[in-house]
Image (cartoon, rainbow, N blue to C red):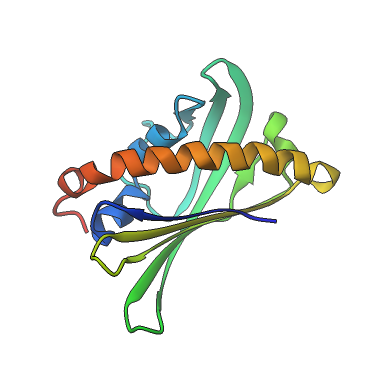
Length: 166
């Protein structure tokens, strides 16, 4: 059973596309519940390129949750209405700590234009944790709802924040 969001965000799709590649936005929508620290030389880049990125997670900035690999790739596809949907895939997952109970991880964020010109943002997380999957999914569902609220709150700023990048 996946955890999903289907939102209309108050920003243009190009700004949302840049936002989902931004470590700063990732940290903002993860907090304050989860603090994220880069394990890459030089810390977080301004924009994540495709490939692997290691981060350390702490619940409420105190409780160690372990290390996670974020393994990004992008794709685009044509929708039936002729518009384009862009998708970021994260096929990484936890590699240490309590989150290691998650055995498989696939996170997808899809960006397309909403009928009014804003962004349709679909966010889907599929995880497996064996017999613990139902318990883990409850935790992710709560986190995804909080994440969705943060996305809606931050999105109006993205057009100015990411102007000229898309």
